[in-house]
Amino acid sequence: MLKYISLAVAVCLVTTIDKVYADETTHSQYAGQQTREIKSLSKDDIIELRRGGGWGLARAAELNGIPGPAHLLELKAELSLSAEQVTEITRIFETMRAAAILKGEELIELERRLEVQFVKQELNKDRLEKILKEIAEVRSDLRFIHLSTHLKTPELLQPAQIRKYNILRGYQNDPCKSVPKNHDPVMWRKHNNCS
Image (cartoon, rainbow, N blue to C red; front, top):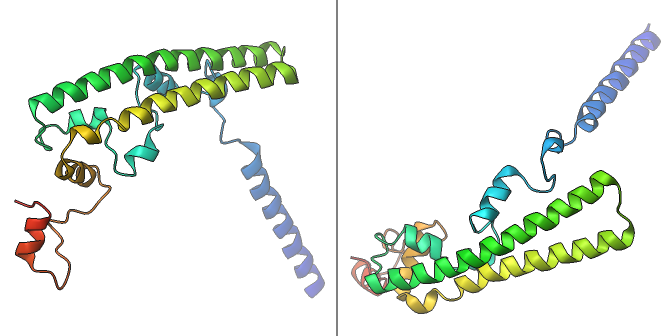
């Protein structure tokens, strides 16, 4: 009897393992993406590139406290930006945006060329390497456009505006709302430009 129970448990276990394994491997995380015009770019990616959006390329600056012009303009009231600051940040933003749109279109076209090569099955190692190098160069240029623009904003801002930007964006805690233990609250707020 014990022999039959052990056999039944083993069969159930193997069946369960096979089913779990089959369910996990049958469908790819890419399922549904095969209908994209350009498989390597989503519809949202293309929209972002065509509007000159950041596409996450400036995170190294943004998350290290160096404000981006688009978000500065979005937060101009909260940051009390002067008319001169708004004018200059707008100029920087529009220059960046125009350059980013051109590079974004270039990247989309290169990804489309790669797509066509795969569809036609005309790729060989040399062609693949060439187009991937072109894509990498354009992507690098696009990232440079966004990151180098972030480098221009700190000189236009007061340190308190940069601190407030980082608080508003959720990258830092608000020092005005969290006075550390053993600190005089009045002096702490004064040193942190709290109102």
